[in-house]
Length: 106
Image 1 (cartoon, one colour):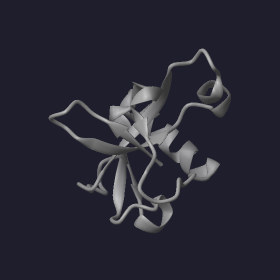
Image 2: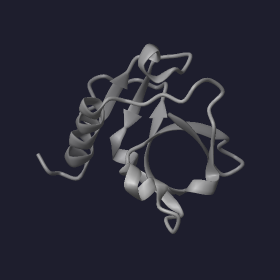
Image 3: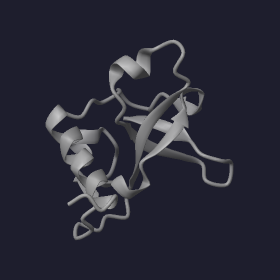
């Protein structure tokens, strides 16, 4: 989990970096692909993936909003207050399936 700095009126928002590590670490890549997290949990939304606090390291349960997948500048990422967490490959693939649903690929 990382924190992404949004425009000043929005503050910081936790995100899951979903682009592959080879791309994330490439010196010429200035952006990463992320899915923002929210504490407004709607378990019945097919594009949201519920993530318990214990899995993310955040203080509250949250949901990954797959319909809001976006690209952000690496320079806008800041380290989280606690230790950086890594979601399992299985969970990232669950999130990818939610992104596919948000694109109409059922």
